[in-house]
Image (cartoon, rainbow, N blue to C red; front, side, top):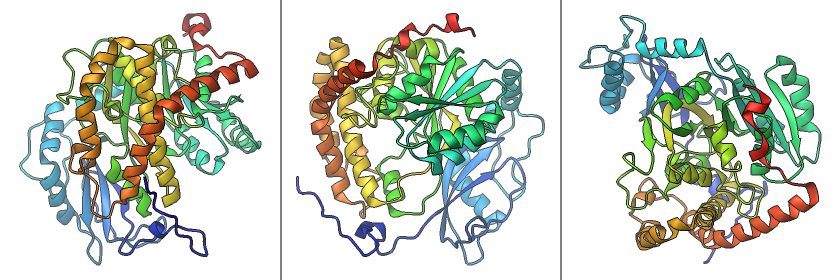
Length: 468
């Protein structure tokens, strides 16, 4: 493979960091269950003027979709963008109205859709919160206090009565993370600092898992902003249907200020839509021929929760995978595959909302695409090695899988625009080729770290022994 060469400027940037014609896009939210305000093309938080916006639309606090708007010179009046929202989301609006027992509507205007009574979805949420189960949120991190701080600020303000946040500092080289957590956040009583010296995000997740006392554990990253209802919606989703072992949620960009952030969205991003979905190996299979091996469609590791007993029974997330290991990623994908193929269900809920800060430089995006390729095929290798019963089924799907990967107009590539750098696609493919080798190296690395530091066995951490 011929890789595109980095073009350096005096500031050390890549030519794709400032391509001709790129213009930032403003990220916004609008609640249409109330009167709609006029919106400005100028973001008051940073003083920038924008030509476009991507708007998260909510109805009675529930996210129902994203809409792209073009600003006029003075922004947009409420009647202008109300009609645009209606054009793109009228089905979703009426679906949510029916869910709440309200009459359907024929249009959306500047008055919005004020509820005639308290929406049943909000009543159900309040009833759940009155007896909410204990949840532990685990945040692995390494030397990123600048992004970790805003993440913890939002986690400290969750609208959930019974939770704890464990920040797991992974093989730190400084005390910056410990100083931040202990000085600013531990006094809140909600957030606690832990340290894990074995390098790798899955080691950090499993270190946190040892401390979990309740029946549910959620995971997120150190470069996000969580919605205040995130944890509530994630844990409520476990009651969607029987035998739910894992729940994932909606993750949208926190900003689209750089070309690399927009290209990541074109690649696929973390958002899997705004429709509740259930996955299993029986009646809740998608019609895709590659199911269930397209586990990336189940959700993202930045936004996931498990029944504690389920993730512990799996041995936690595999430290042979993930950031910081030779496999560079895939710990979340492997866990999703294991949950589904072992007879449990995975639920994707649009209520579990997180905003993620995508990479802002092209060089970081290049690395991310390669790492995703490595992690994806490494995670598949892990699942086939651990459960050989899947090998024959997987083998029958390889030819079509290659078609999806290589054909430029396949479903995998349909969101990529003409300006999407081709080398990003090549880097992901090259990473997939290396993934199985990386997994073997990852397993050897695990053995080395266990000899050095000892084993970290989450299966021995009993929820009942620690209390609920």
